[in-house]
Image 1 (cartoon, rainbow, N blue to C red):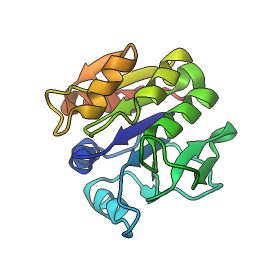
Image 2: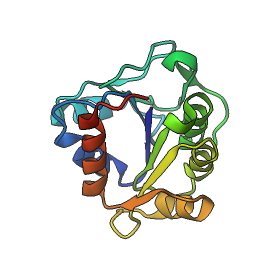
Image 3: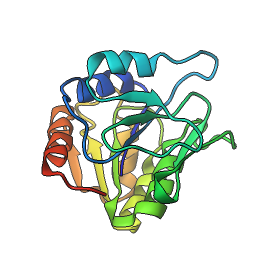
Length: 188
């Protein structure tokens, strides 16, 4: 299971990341991008125009589908449960945000263990750091965008401070890693 977190500068990072994909990886991709709860998001539409991989806002109770990008809707935590069933939660904010990467990463770690992949991209604050630690503690893989290449390095730096990170990569290298993962046919 691939989980990606981004905040400030994250929309551009996600656009770059997904724009060259012609086919999705053989696993679901779950994305938390901090968005304003006051406005309807167009992130799904914007990303879908730039990739051939299906992109949609996650729905409560739907099953995460391999090769598809499931986006957390504004003001809802995105969680994954047994069997890849997605849950949306309006519970309190974590790190002053909802959706929170920490909630997503922790749920992915709990249900996928060493088959969990957490990616932390550009963003401010510490969201994602504790969740990435949970992924590492369960044997999963943590990848952060190189803070020197991130528009906003706060989230990648916080994750580097919080846990042992498997890879620190520029965005194009993260893209190559996910594409290689897709080409390998590896399943989680």
